[in-house]
Amino acid sequence: EIPLQYGADRLGKRQDAAMQKFRDNRLGAFIHWGLYAIPGGEWNGKVYKGAAEWLKSWAKISSDEWMKLMDQWNPEKFNAKAWAKMAKQMGVKYVKITTKHHEGFCLWPSKYSKYTVAQTPYKKDILGELVKAYNDEGIDVHFYFSVMDWSHPDWRYDIKSKEDEEAMARFFEFTDNQLRELAERYPTVKDFWFDGTWDASIKKNGWWTAHAEKMLKELLPGVTINSRLRADDYGKRHFDSNGHMMGDYESGYERRLPDPVKDLKVTRWDWEACMTVPENQWGYHKDWSLSYVKTPVEVLERVVHAVSMGGNMVVNFGPQGDGDFRPEEKELAAYIGSWMKKNGECIYGCDYAGFEKQPWGYYTRKGDDVYMVVFNPPYSRHLVVKTPGGTSIKAAQVVGGKEVKVEETARNEFNVDVPSALPDEPFVIKLKIEKKQ
Ligand SMILES: C#C[C@@H]1N[C@@H](C)[C@@H](O)[C@H]1O
Image (cartoon, rainbow, N blue to C red; front, side, top):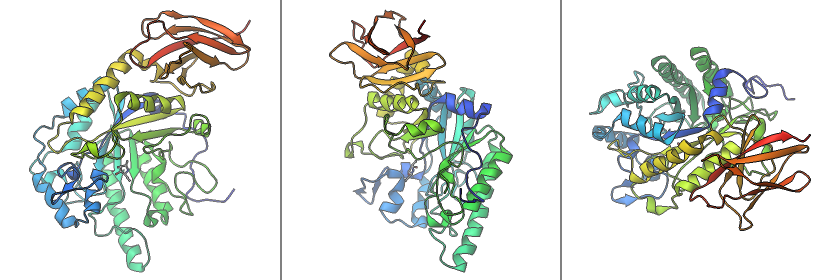
């Protein structure tokens, strides 16, 4: 192996209780909320199709101009308790909040920046209100933090001179101060999800990424950190130059998922995917007709797909500038929540089942229980199950508990009946795995 000073700190999955809770949570929600929610993808009468939280970049707006949006930041419909209720009803076990996105606007009253909620008409600590409201509902809070900060004069995309080096040194000190501030102000935070770490200025400073993880873990024992923060001695990201994952879970699956047959390698480590409901909108965009918008069932399928491969899924919400959610997002949360209420046992605390993927849907597993989550019931009305050698199976529907007929059709191959009254939503069959006598 290549000797590394800033490579992976640990081989294999973390086995402590905090990581197990991260893993067991499985379903999370992302909240992308910042100044970008005010223009919602439109600037000077032009609507930009790109991601709304990148509008400053698409429309080539200076930071001074962009930060004037702070004068309009007064979300009169914002109600942290209502947001937490919505998350509770959706069945998410954690929420990742953008503390500061690339624009540099802070949802908390940071004393290291003049671009914070404190300098807006709203004045109050939005992040603090949200942390309390979600925690009061028993929901864990994770912090999204963009290292890249377009508003900061010392931010550099690359380091090509002594001046750049000195500027980035000041920038890392500023960033350390903000991270320490977040950890000390909100000690119930369970995770930091770093973004904006792809530029050369960070890749050339792997030492700082290792330092940032170490600093947060000293301040918040048990806190989890995503792989996207880390760069090793040679600028390799997520996985170091020896192929070992850095951080506590892989966070490269953004708006995409590993293939359930070809990418089974992901079951060897912890990982978390995140997804948008339109093709690529994280912040609020006023016009969702500009791209395909996934239906609630399509969102649900991605959640189950991730869990079936031993991963978490975070579904994104982009609240409006007024602090309310768009109807499509309220409907999505309600649909997912009603399904999770009936079938959540096949998600929470579940993992990769180790069964061969079948076209009807996905397997998840919890101990000796294997769940069949059916999205595509076949015309044959039989769900083929191929089991590892020497096992037999019994089956019952999760909703209602009705036994389901199982017939062995070949060695370690079974037909599990599709329920005669086909449910009008994806349904779950629970298998009891038994050792063959
Ligand atoms: C690119 C990029 C960012 N990464 C996603 C999680 C969003 O925050 C998007 O703006």
